[in-house]
Length: 230
Image (cartoon, rainbow, N blue to C red; front, top):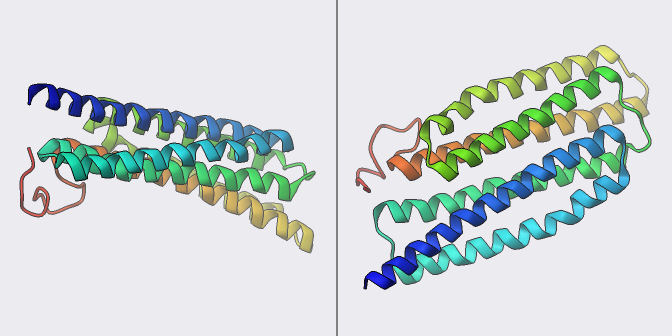
């Protein structure tokens, strides 16, 4: 029995390691996709798009392993929360990768348009902020750190401010011709993609809090619908 439990906890550790691996792939996609967008780099955009297949494959593998664990091991208490948190966290990370694919595809749509300097600066900041928030979310997950996890919601205000600044800049540029309007719509969508990435990082923080405490932030203080899992 002791050997079985040791193997089981080794499987849980492997799940957490692969969540981190998936997160680092998403972090790389944010950095590479942002650079490709800012530089109108079609080859770089293609690499981001093609790399998403590996993220999808790892996500599906993690899902299957989580379901197998739930079916065969019937985990108790904190172990159950870990498996549930892994399932929810990989969804947030996978969606971040998908959003970077959208950014990469926008690079294609806008090519060879050169972005105005004010827009370039804001998009660069948004990419950096999305990367910072994802990395903090991954650190919180790896270390089961509620303090870091809960900091993400306040950090998200920075991304919201950047998105508002992007919209103001788009309007200030005053592109009235149809081609200009289409380009600005695409840029606005890119801003929305980054804002959603930051939201996914906040959601990961909430999953970490649940994994550690059994309570979802913003709830009524009751653990797991009135059942304490510890």
